[in-house]
Length: 186
Image (cartoon, rainbow, N blue to C red; front, side):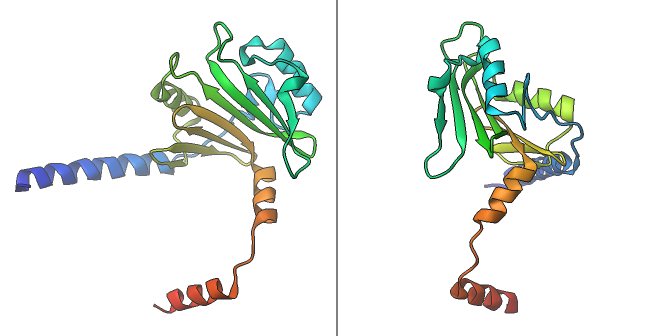
């Protein structure tokens, strides 16, 4: 590589880094707590009622409702890929203790592109708090909203997510603690 190429590459990386910092420094207020009429915290029956009314999800009734293995969590999975006029594909609605806590919307890539969704979310809610090539994340005190590649929009109840994460954390083994202590001494 010649000097001119190296300088051009450095300018590109500097611009990319600065753009990333701008995205990371913004905050999101008033994030939606769900998609359309489906809101975090709704009961299974409330969500089923909305899904029956809103044909864009392709809800087929109780056959789309199941229990997750080894838990008391309920999952509703819909398939709108054959629903005329819908921009959605598969969607999942996950419940914890009878309340909706995750909404996952797969958007049809033949009808919509990732950048259009990302740009719209930035205009409505500000730039994401975290951004990487695979995922953009916006956070409020109650909701985590993410846009993942290829085009997956996810709304998560922040309090439930943090509780489940905390409950599932395993304490470090003595070997891991020793390793950490060694690294801290460096």
